[in-house]
Image (cartoon, rainbow, N blue to C red; front, side):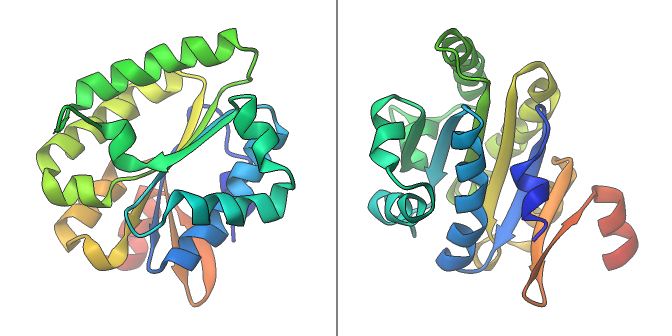
Length: 195
């Protein structure tokens, strides 16, 4: 892959990644989080329903060694997307942005170098595309002011074409697996190659 692209993304990066299978998602994100842990970044892995926390932890542990050490010192959280995005049964784009801004202050106060996140938006987009559109736009407006790098992951098999196009337009880069090789595209490159 251009896994180096994801792993070494600068602060303020807002990327989207489309995947077809659980293994594809794990294989792309494990090196991403390994790099974050090694760089003393606070990491958040917000999982889709198809990936249980224990499976994600097991895969990451194989790469980083003693994952429990990082978990116990509060450097990484691995939970289902609903634990982060759904509060009292509701998803609010503005509450989520506010949460990230507060979290950044906490993280920097704990002497972590910033936030590295991968969050799955598949089910959120399917449940309420309008709120997710708003959230992605707000993240785009705010991310360069936050010491954060974010990969928003989406299942290709479960997102309709219109939402895929919207998702691409809200991100600085799009990562897709073509012919068993991860490739990175900017929105303008996607328009010229696929339209």
